[in-house]
Length: 327
Image 1 (cartoon, rainbow, N blue to C red):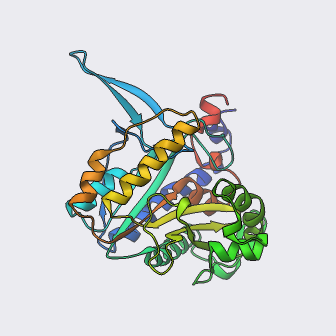
Image 2: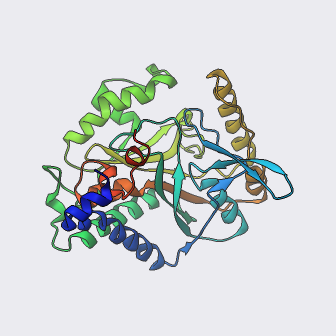
């Protein structure tokens, strides 16, 4: 049965889907109240991002005169927003549609999804940690004004969202939860160890967790930590077994950024994947001068899922990919 049919059969179900409206309204008011600009950048671009382990949707733009250009649906608005930051727009945010191909369709993944990104100028990742805590708790309170944040319920579990949220470094997490020193772990093994051994322990804690200071090999767009260049100023947020956001103190050095993009290209070639060009317009924007800034990408569908107390993002989408494509 299609979602629209379920709603027609059970009108009360509509409340579950309309949680998204409350969440998006809350996001907008949160940033507008702080005088952030809301920006609108393209979904169709001529050069995709080149993360080694992600794949884009490719299409072709054709003009009435027969001119043809490759086009790609964005996986993130990050490159476009950084060009605006170089132009001097200041603090800004965007809520936009993004797309990823060749990914599993799961309770936490959909080929088309909604992304929130915000960038705070003159800030670093620690400032954005506080932004995220405050935004998330405001979202939960907007959906349920009577909620006790110290006893927030989600899918049968009770979680303590009291501020501040626990922070633990990547290095500490590996030692505490996996019994490993990160210098003994190969770059290619970080993800699997984190997914299989660390994330389950974070889920058991019944608290949110902010994991910060990732190895430099795990953060191609983040700046190095001055006090320890083995690490990058990156953090991720986890709650109830769900990764909610990925933040960087943004890399502003155009030479270093180009080197990291070239490394990504080489890794894609080694994996036998399509070789895409580097976005030289972004490199030029960084060269012109990007202010100190920290930014984060947040999956809006996952925020809605938690706020609506459902177990899958498909239960928050009127037209989930698995339904419309019969996956």
